[in-house]
Image (cartoon, rainbow, N blue to C red):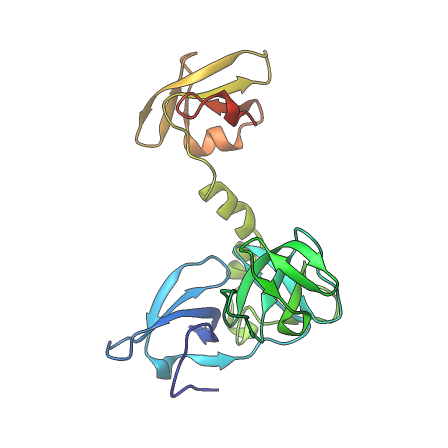
Length: 227
């Protein structure tokens, strides 16, 4: 459904992909500011170029590369996620339409989120991990128009985003070499290449993917950051 008026929080399709509106600037030429839900990439558009969608039970989509299915027939669990589809916050709560929140505590069928919002069961769907049998994939408006190469790329998006958002090394970071048990520090960084005290040089990506290097702590923050 085409929209004459767009409001913050709505789900819309733009360029055939599912987005969420995060701001509307009525006087701007491209008034709709949104992010693509699967990877949070931001876009601008005119209102007439987006198509409205209202999420419902058993809809499935990717959020930051991870697939979820919306369920109204499941109870929320601590550490899981909810999708707020019918917001009715109390004056002490701060949430709005179509927000994603993590559950900190379950109280009956209601929840308290990590943002300290109390959300009633009638206000949210449970975000069940994965694409469940019989679910409706809403990642694309028309999946038949999506090339196979794009679908294949989507399948690896979660790992790609994890790598992209991984902690980048800094001078003073200490790593453990799992092959010989030795510890060494990052002593120099040039562009995306880290030089270790042992003389080893690796790109950030190689260091992140390496099976034999494990981050211990950073001298800049102290040993209490040991993981």
